[in-house]
Image (tube, rainbow over all chains, first blue to last red; front, side, top):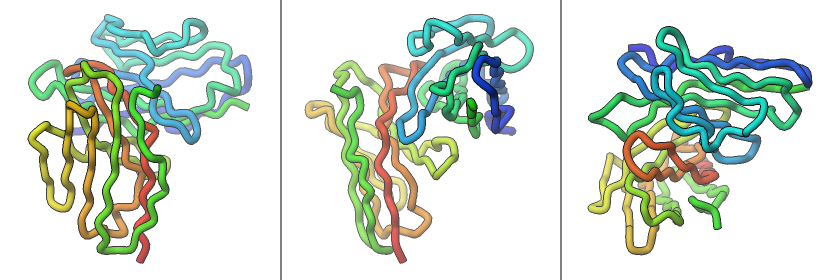
Length: 115
Length: 110
């Protein structure tokens, strides 16, 4: 059973470009969470999605950031017009719909560098 | 006040030592508690859940004190491979976002 997959693992963008980060949850998991880890900081929650629904986006910056989890395909975190401050590791986690409700399993992350 | 506070360390201990990490959380409504481990430039991995009754997994023991809003992790007989950052994590309930501390860095030295 493959774990949470994220791609790309590393992404370099120039200021003003767009960044698209993808996350495929573990098989059977319908809940996806995105977290951001700035250098030397802890992980911060950004957004929580289920298939075709955004459940909680309280941690997402109001501008330039968006997320989706379509019926088919991976979850996408999109950052428009990137700035240097967006440079961070972006981790996706998934969890099953119920039962072992607490455990979130993390993907390897995408490291975004904005030049 | 930060939601989850940890001593950042680093804790430098010799192999075989016992080391304890502490963590406090501010949200009294928190229901779920965990310790995650994060190696350098890797993703967090669940080490163990923490229950009020306390729980043990091999060399690792976790304790929760709800009244004091305090969580602890004890590592006995430290191994070189235990070197990592240990993240204290809480959440309000199942399937809700996790709130992470900044982590405590541990270096086990030969």
